[in-house]
Length: 533
Image (cartoon, rainbow, N blue to C red; front, top):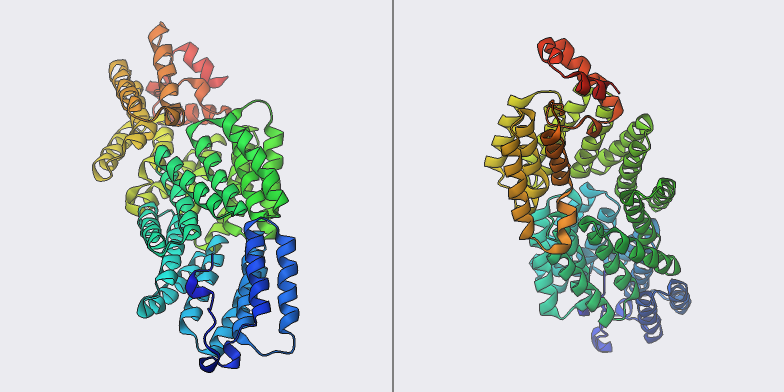
């Protein structure tokens, strides 16, 4: 969090300023130099300046000066991912302001402490402190402080997965920062807004926000901020399916973050790089595993439980790809425990959804369906239903594969009515389900109509966003083509047998044979052999 004008404690005339309020010029100068060096990505040199400032305060009782140095230390520690040290410095600075009776600075420091906690996934404490800080700053009409609080509130809601609220708060903060002329505050918030927009598949707008953040950081000479904005660009590229571009950018940024000693940034890049390498599917899965393991190690070392959990989820996905479902399950259950401890419910439910997949590939159909259902029920009442279609898809796929067509139709109907999807969500999640429903009753024409609608909607999306939206539609199209060419119906409840994990095929057959033996007998020998293979 940057220093705004109200945070710099400008010197008052000596006649109006007690000794406790005085900041020696030498101390102030060292702090300003340290702030500049942090922006330049030179943490070791910044720490030396702050050590000089401490030396200058030796044998002096100057709470405001001490607070100034401690805050500068906190920003330095946070810039390199030393979150425990940052929090300790902020608490010590807060004690100085308590001695001075400075309510505005107390509230501002409480907001910074909240931001530190939120960045580590401690959402309950962070939210409580933000509310306390907000009430004081609003009472004092402290506009710079309020701008920071709204940015932190946006971060809190983004961590919770409450995307619409996060977007509203980010836009409010951006407007406040612009009025104040605070470029760094706006840059940080634009970066957050880019992540919010990415979450709702608004890729062109996300790129624009990330580029605005990069430009503002560059104007301020803030090198860590520039590289962080470019990290967000890399994440957007991955979501768009532009994987080679993402990998090149991430590899470049990894060296930047390591040179800047930004451990949190390094861990975030390793996590995203692992996902990109895994998505590329070019026989480098062991490389992806190393990236995830290192990311977990670093996030754990800096006490960022939520991001450590997210990296575990990605590692579990990799283990699933490697055919190690038991390892994946163990990693996911560890991640769920971490997320429960931080109060990150949306992240927890995403992990529960991933657990559903791992249970399904082990043939534990009822357990998998329950995990998917828990995630879907959560999404219905969360964040205005923004996650419903994303969480609906895996539940519907499993239940269709099990032949539970009426249940799927009714659930899809209610979700579509109560939570009308955006265009990207309709293409990515809903239309593939509708096409599979049609194929499950051998209605190729209706399946093709759903694919055609998806193609039409895709043509209205930015070209760079299309690859990230069309994956499921391409799978449906492949199933349609197989069905059209085969002499005997080749699909199992709307899916090609090879689309099912090997551990899922036999349990599906066993369930069908036990529940509906007449349908089992109607399977063609070719389809039965493919499902048993």
